[in-house]
Length: 388
Image (cartoon, rainbow, N blue to C red; front, top):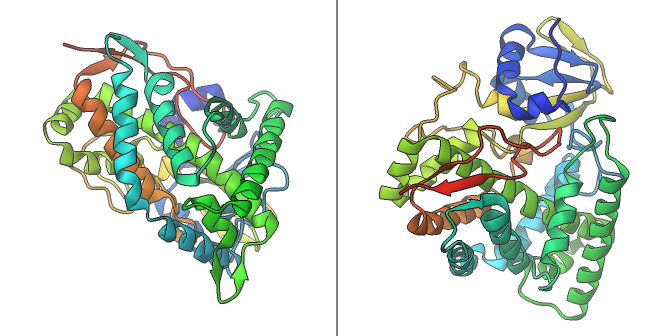
């Protein structure tokens, strides 16, 4: 009998065969292990993303939610509150002028890859992508230098869940509480001494006299630190994994770095780190012969929708020339990722610098250790070796 457990290490290792069965045979599937419905077809996921009045985010958007986070962040609110938050946060992003981060990003990437000099084998996650993403996030948010390792370790723990209990464990809750306290101290310091950084702008962003309240500033900052480090870091690792596995595609990107932009879009479709997010039904919904009840949780399996052959031709082929419009790598609808532009810019710059120094590389291990997370999918380590 078919089952689908998003907490299973086997699903983390390779969810795509299960996704295919879901799409073809069980497009509206009740997972007792997850305690929610699984939507796996592209059109159903997009409809849910657009119909926020029915598929609500206000009970949390992570498959296993963190305590007291729902209702105070961009991803865990519905319009009109969501629109108010997005407007205020977007104003802070614009004020920070993200294009001004391009040169610092390139310098950070060049320094990180220079540290690999003389190493024939290395862990891309530990030795390159995590160093790059943490330093970029610290620069963008204005976080004090010196806390990088602890902040990254806590951010990684925050997105994980216990595959045995299918819940957040004490270590994950502790990491969230630590990050919240850390964010509170930085916010207080920035209010006393404002700078040209995102946290300063969050604290003071105003539209027609409306500002973020204390809880919104705190939890938005906490979530941004988590997402900025782990989502970006996880995606960079997935992109490098694709480049390592598909040598022809990598060679094209090395020869013509302008192709990196298209390769990034294809990786977001083919192997996104943002695999599954949840919603809560406000009303009963009948879909594919099933009746989902008001109050039920629904999983939107982005990773499955991105491999749906009803939307994308030959979806299991990695093609850097595809230009996949409408992929779900950054979600969609009102909750399309606000950080998509900075993430694209960061990965393009980082991998361009990486390829200048290490143009040829391959995977050391066939089997990878995947992060235990029901929402995100990325390798905990990615051991690469140079090819000459």
